[in-house]
Length: 87
View 1 (cartoon, helix red, strand yellow):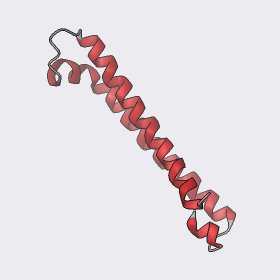
View 2 (cartoon, helix red, strand yellow):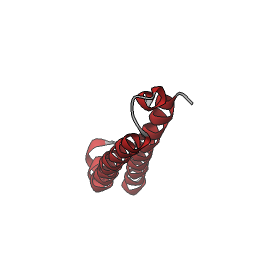
View 3 (tube, one colour):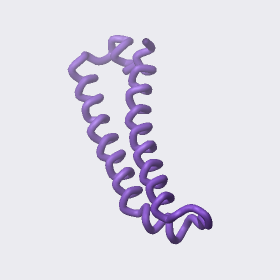
């Protein structure tokens, strides 16, 4: 993005770069969220030792954490692109 702002790249190449980054980041974010969802039951019952909280509640919290991490990852990509353009 900084090279585009400086005139080193045209808008088509930057758009292609951003789209490629979007696809890769979204795929990685989806795999993180899916992995958190798939492993939340195991994490809640074997890794976290919550004595007073039900296992289902802990599993839902792990699901939410996976979703938040995935969304923050996507957000970070866009924030970095804007910061690179120095807007």
